[in-house]
Structures are given as C-alpha cells and as structure tokens.
Image (cartoon, rainbow, N blue to C red; front, top):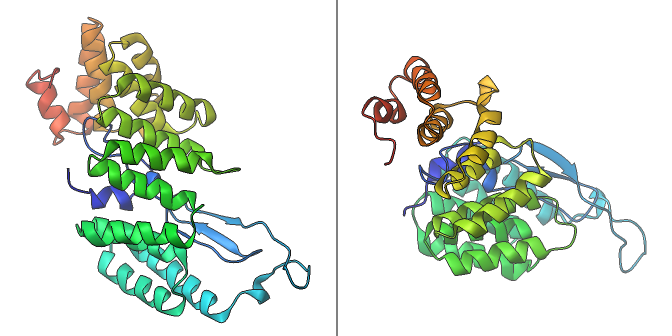
Length: 294
C-alpha cells in the first residue's frame, strides 16, 4: 500500500476509517523543539506548548532561550516554515526548508523526522526510512519520531516492526501523546488483521481521550468487523450526533451497522442523509447499489 500523502496533511486524524483508507493527519506529528523554555509547535494538533526547563551542567542555572546556539535557532525557524508548508501540502517547498534547517544544525532531530514524512509523501521510501532512522540516532528517545516511523512501517505492511516502534514510543516516561499513538497502533493492528488486539488498543485510546471522534470511528469499525454491532452502533452514533463531525464514511458505517442489526428504518435514515449531504460520494453510490458487505 502506498503512503497516503494527503493523510499526512490533514489537521484532524479524520475518517476514512481503517478499511476505507488511512489513518489521517493527527497520527503524524511535526514539531520544532529547542533546549529549554522555548515554545514547541506541534502542527498536527495546532497547539503550542513549552518545554520543561533544565539545569545547565556548568552553571547550574536554568536553560533559557538565550542559551540556545544560533545554529539551532536558525534550524528551528526553518523548521517552523517547513512545518507550515508541509501542512499545506507543499512538500517540495517544505523539503527545501528542511534542508536549510539541517544545514544550520546537522544534529537537529526534528528536521530529520519531518524529512522522513516529506519523503514518505513524495514516495521515496529509501530516503524516508533513512530520515526516520537518522532522527532516532540523534535522539533515541524521540517518541514523535517513533510514532511517525511506526506509521510509515505500517503503511509498508511491516507490521511487527511497526508494533515495536509504537511500543517504544509508549514506553517513554511522561509521553504526552499516548492516546494518539494508541490510536495509530490500533489502526495498524486492524490493518494486520489483529482485530482483538486492535479493539483493546483503541479502547485504551478512547478511555484516555473520549472526545476524539477519530478514535470512536475506528473503534466502531473494529467492533463492526468483530460482529459487535450494538457496541459499534454506540460509538458511531456519538460521532454522527454531532453534525460537524459527520461525513460520508461515518454515515455509511452507521448504515452498514443498522443493516446488520436488521433495522431497515435506520438503514434508510442514514442512506437518505448520504444521498442528500454527500450525493457524489462513493459511499452514497455503494448504498444505492446495496453493497453493504463490500
């Protein structure tokens, strides 16, 4: 399966679900970081946080922005530009900025992480993998790179290696984005046909972050494939009850669940929404053709 570059560029990790396509944007993260007290931009979630300050080994003073080497500052600025271009799908321009970031600071691990995502999006598997590996050589505890590399390996159907990478990311103490990694891991397990493991992993992600509609959609899809139709209905209903979270895939999944439950009225209700709201979608076409089992 080829890498879905469009999936990388969306801000929400939104459906298509496991069987219909790829796990989307928030499942990859691009970040710029520095030595301390300086903001870190996680463009996948559109948020800014501040890194924890540390003590300098020489002066025993707190590390601040003034302690950051000029080379790293230049690399960080270039990375911010690269992340912005990457988010807009301008991969070649983003790559140019990443190259400049690396030229400024060859040991700037986030630049190699983003370089891996860009080359993956461009379909250059050799350079993508080389980039992720190099980022981890620089910073062996970079959970964001582990997350992205794991998803890349999953896209390549290298499932055991992907699982190892997800587990390593989750083992990092005080890792803040474990729900995202659990979501990605669960989708990867489902792609590998490990439905029981996928259910458990996605349930853990949902328990930590029940407000994430993507987790609910993917968990519903897994439960549907396991024949747990009532439980699948519960999770997809939570998504479809919020109009701005509903799309053709979520309505189609709901219709398929109702069809399995023998609820003809429910099937027609979701089918009508598909026809009226997403008439040109492949899901609406599948509904009209009665392809509920494909």
